[in-house]
Length: 341
Image 1: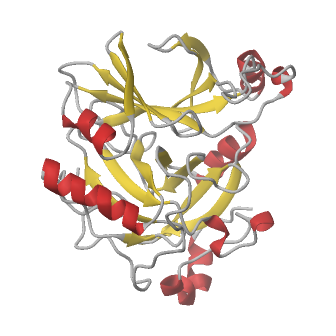
Image 2: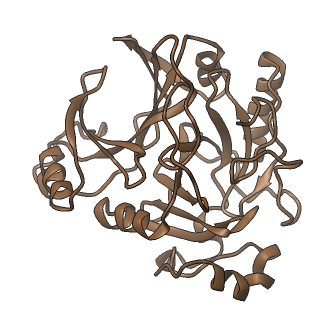
């Protein structure tokens, strides 16, 4: 496990730099006139079988594959992004297919549940759909009395669906039972031993606000749209989680551009003594990482340039996309990587 202030590679192992040989850092034109970008950017899960995962996320859950690429520092393995039609920040879950990965274990210092937003009154239809596909589900209520449908992905990553309403109209959808389309991420739940500076960082650095504290859980909200919520479940002394198949490698928070991220990084350094990793250019976003006081690996990712930077919007996720420094190895990598259509 990497140290809190260390450098983090994409495959989870520490190395000397967090950047890839892809050229200098660039501002991709997301100016300050854009809507303030806050909340979750994406969540990255570790998987063992890319085909099985694709059948689940694109098939059973109906997410769009918005990018098929590789782990930049382990290019013999896939990094596949799923989301809405455009891969909008706040609607993206990515999967890292680590070779010969052993099962992980969710616990303290890990993301223990990732929730997606669905239409109001659609959970029964979702339960029927998933049951017809052999996915075991259970109905629960969150600590904040939200109706939830909980289930694992094929590697055991804990997922849930939570009904959400359009805050602008305040209306339930009349045809919501037929509306079986995910509406982006709802949020993530972290298991932590105690209240610590993570709570302060979420509010003062990432722009969340504490809206409820009940049943041993704290709900923090950045906005009422996709990726707007995060829950900390205080569980006291308990075992640490173990990174591996079926666990979440990191949760990424949004920054609208490099300048916005620089402000966050400076707050982390000056107020909390936290040093982030060197930047990594992932083509579709630029990220830095750090280990939060609670133990979870956080990233700060830019909103741009987005997934249409190397594919037409209507063709997202169709072709294997490689960064410039790996393009010369395309033929080799296509022999190594299993076909993924």
